[in-house]
Image (cartoon, rainbow, N blue to C red; front, side):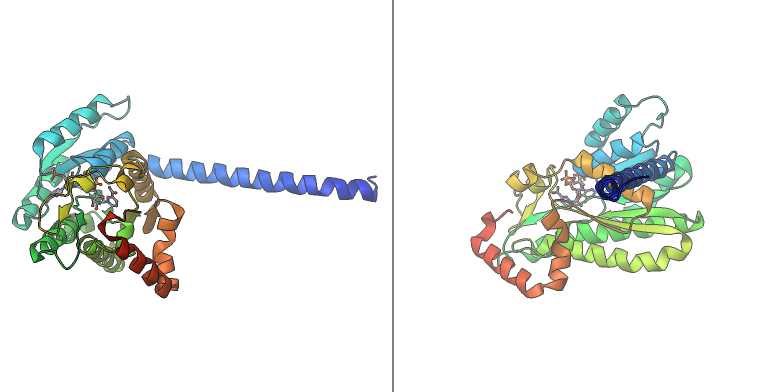
Length: 314
Ligand SMILES: NC(=O)c1ccc[n+]([C@@H]2O[C@H](COP(=O)([O-])OP(=O)(O)OC[C@H]3O[C@@H](n4cnc5c(N)ncnc54)[C@H](OP(=O)(O)O)[C@@H]3O)[C@@H](O)[C@H]2O)c1
């Protein structure tokens, strides 16, 4: 029989062991669930837009690694061939599907239905669509030409709509699929000197939020991923107020997460069927929520940021 004193001293250690044991089991369960979900992607057909560099390129590797049949698209054919070669060179046993390449400009709307038919002809279906092609922007609203706003909307918003619209009928026919939109934290919260980009990403968020409910009955998963800064060429390719190219690697972009990290998160989001995922440092992740809960405070922060001018990159 334990004395009262022994009881009192052993209870905390039993509790600690139970808590840590429970957490360990939960961690193991979550790990196994994720692994199983990713395994379920094997042999799925994935079409990725904007796969000639950055996040799209990393997605090509990540989905291929998950055993998917990857179709990569963008405008620059030579870059797509490079990505294809690279993916093949990293093929390990069991992941034998050779990527297919489709040259596609997401703003050439007339050509998109034919391009999607070509994609469908490779494996007879598209199970997963990753709407990733995109363009960024730097500039003051006062100086920005209307053509710049149009350009950003064409690539970032109408491009997604055009490709999604062309893929949806076949997904409905196949009774299921998954469509992911690569948005941005700037699709949750507007920053000064990013009007054209932020507006296009808010449009993406709204379109896919509406679409999600409409296609749920067809077993089609709609996922939106909103990353913070990612180490890619996005800032180099960004368009400025006068339609010129920014041509600079911003320090925030250089310090961002790797495209490989984000691509793995996109694979997981697809596998788990998650609706809305924000990826990045804690403050960036909760920015959208704070904006809803304390809008006046966010407005003050943004006014201060605007005063710093175009140099504010944090
Ligand atoms: N990097 C970041 O910090 C960050 C953060 C949040 C969200 N994002 C989003 O992530 C996505 C990918 O960007 P990234 O960072 O990987 O930049 P990136 O390296 O510049 O890649 C952009 C991709 O989009 C393609 N693209 C551009 N215009 C196109 C068009 N008209 N038709 C077809 N493809 C087109 C480019 O290929 P071609 O030039 O060969 O056509 C390229 O493959 C974008 O939607 C971006 O908004 C990026």
